Image 1 (cartoon, rainbow, N blue to C red):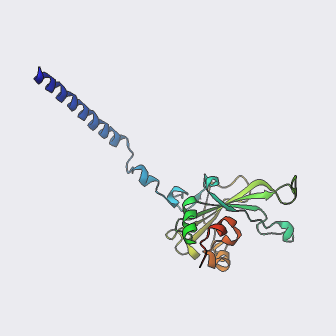
Image 2 (image 1 turned 90 degrees about the vertical axis):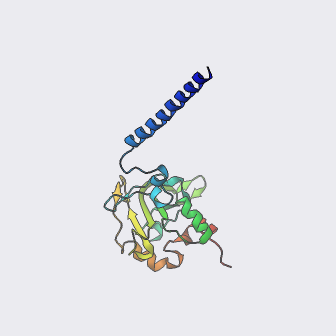
Image 3 (image 1 turned 45 degrees about the vertical axis):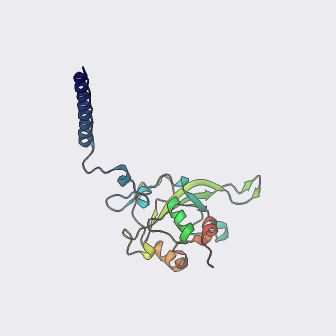
Length: 210
């Protein structure tokens, strides 16, 4: 009787081992060639935040409105003789990991992504009084610090514009150096080529020098 019980247990164990082995084989067969573990497919940092095409174009970012909002500067036409270079509101977001790094070091880490979402100047009257209120979304831009991809650009920053009018472009090539990089290099060199002095959230968390 005891021998029969041992035989039954042995048989059950063999079946379970066989099922486990079959499951492993099937999983390997179903997985696409070159597949990597989930952690390797979505590492922390830039790779998980933005996506590029094989020819170096940036795909339109998503999810950035859940990032850290740092400020929304405005240089309206009214104050620039009707011809402001950037007359829209600029709602600026930074990815959370880069924000935490900036809070600790006062520097922008390699992989930092800044998103600038543009909106028009809308109604100038509200229950609170006269002023500048945001209108409709009009455009989208991005700045990415990448020492490998933009190794020859000032500060290793690449700048992208998806347009200032809807519908926006789905993917875009980097702006020419003279379009953005040169201005940032000339006017924001002391702040890591980011106009952080206009972003109150960044000013508030920047480490204070002793």
